[in-house]
Length: 302
Image (tube, rainbow, N blue to C red; front, side, top):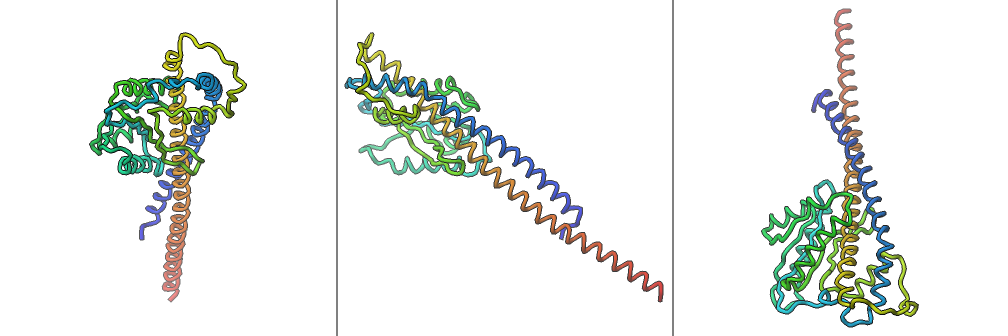
């Protein structure tokens, strides 16, 4: 058994660890709430964009080239979103498993699809490089916390330019969707080719209400539908991907909060257990010393 001095040093070390994990838990809680508030801040834009889309939705070419799969394209571009660092439980592992399963189960094409990746988060970049997959771009160092629209817009504009090359038949994002503080769901979301119903569903969710098309007054669009689409759709994509990244960031902070709480509870439990061991060892040492003193006194009397 370790000496009382060694046990006491271990107790001190574990208590310090508990203090650190508690501080990290509180920080993650605050960051998670800020990410949730940022999602709500998208409502005014989402409402305006939804109204514009509703006004021009009668046009067949409302989505332009964004809604058409290029002919002959055999690649898929995937945005893989993970954390910048660890200490967040199974957050990173779960999204990597989802990406692996998605590729394994992707049998909706008659040909073998090839995959390129845009990574957000150093853990996702390391995963792609470690597994020898094709990394097109990495935005890990450009996207900070808290996340701004300008930062996510640079990544979206890069992805749009890649889509316009005609190389990719599909463009997806894999991330952890925030459900609650204790539940994050690894999710695959298709971005291109764009589905108008998915855009409307996102905007209705973000705006908090739907738009009644019958109540809208029709108006002449200038200069033309195509120009409006070429400006509006990228803006909507900015909002969609920004909201997705905020969901992923909220999930990360929630996962780290839970992981740090579990670590703190384990440290407290281990500290209490070692304290009991230390007290028993100390009591045993005291009892031994008392016994020796009594034995010495008795021997002197004899």
